[in-house]
Each structure stands twice: as structure tokens, then as C-alpha cells.
Amino acid sequence: MTIAEVYAYLDALSPFDLQEKWDNSGLIVGAMDQEVSTIALSIDVDEKLIDALEENTLLITHHPLIFSGLKQLAFEKYPANLLQKMVQKNIANIAMHTNFDQTHLNAYVATEVLGFNIIKKEGFVAYFEVDEAYEVFAKRVAKCLSLECVKGVKTKQNVKKVALTTGSGCSLMRSIDADCFLTGDIKYHDAMEAKSMNMSLIDIGHFESEHYFAQILEKHLKNLGLKVIIASSENPFTYIK
Image 1 (cartoon, rainbow, N blue to C red):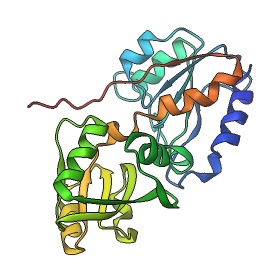
Image 2: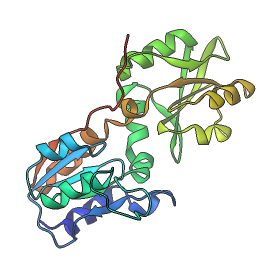
Image 3: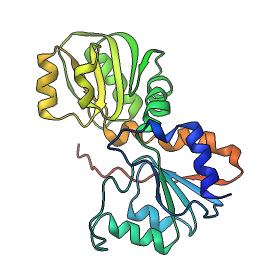
Image 4: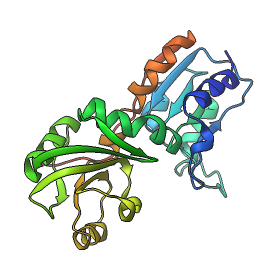
């Protein structure tokens, strides 16, 4: 099977045209006529992962290794150091980022990981209903996502309507219609703005909320007749208790 055939299958599953204008989903490394026998799935590309992969593997990642134009390929610097190894091992790469967020990832985390029924889906945002004290709900979310700690903003005692966006979704905050917003990468000024809006927040982590990408996609790729492995990269953060 060629990369072009795999790409067409992925495009039918989660159209690349749905990606945001700033995104760079699609074929990042490789050629469409390249033959594929093994597919590896991961949220990101890192050096340890590339070293472990067999030659001629198609690596499908959630995050694009290249987001914007490269002005140089200095092989001692990121991401050129990874690109060099990929080319040497003939490892191709397709990224499925904001398109997959909208079609699969956010809904999966809301229903399959957290266990709630979605009442409304708007682009990157999945809405569901809860009737719990903020602390109880926050602890439930932390347990489901295996969070090392819980960081949040409490503006209400109880949580009834929740919005969820995996990864980094605070740029959407002003359009959210919910008591509590679950997303990752919450910054200080995001927290200040949420308090002024009377909206509670729970930081669900970027890696922690998106590493399900590989297991979701694996289920869909089993019908292709190719060897498919989950080879997720590691969380770059270390948490000290």
C-alpha cells in the first residue's frame, strides 16, 4: 500500500480540509508514492521514538513536527535533528491535528474517558451536563485522566454544564457557554479572565488529554491490512510530588 492510499483513507475518516489555517496537518515527511507496510501512531515525534522505529515506517502523529516554514536545517537543533534521522531511516510522517480534534478526539475524551453523554458539539468544543460540587468533579476528572495534580479556577460551588476542548483551548474561552471549561495549558491571565467571566476552569493537561489519539486511530486502521503499532512519545514534563 502506498502513502497516497493511506492518506486517502485518513482524509475520508477525518478530512484534512477541516484543519485550522495556522495548522500544518497532512504529509510532513515522505512521498505519496512511497510503499508502506508498517504504521506507527504517536501524539508527537521525539528522538527516542525515531530510534525505536523500523526503517520505512509511516509515522502518523497528532502534532505536526513542522508548524511553519523552516529557514534552515541545522541538524544540531530541533526539529532538524529529528528530520535528519527520519530521512536517514526513510520514516515518513503524516500529521492529523486540528482536523482530528474536531472529528474524533474531543468527543472520545468526553464520552469514553470521562464517561459523559455529549449534549452539543460545536467545532472543537464538546458540551455535557454534570451535577456535582466543583471539588468532587475536579477529582473525578483527575482520576479519569490520570492527572498528577489538579490546577483550576473555582468560581461556582457546583458544576452543571461543562465544555471540553483537549490540548490548548483557552483561545476559545470567550465563546464558551458553560459553568466550567476543561482544557489544557491554562495560563495565569487565562485564569484571571475566567474569574472575571464567572467561569470555572480545570486544567486537563495537553499531553494528558490528547495522548488518546493513537488508540482512537488504531481501531480505524486495523482494516487496512497493515501492521499498526502504538508508539506514543513520552510526556516532556516531569511532576515532582
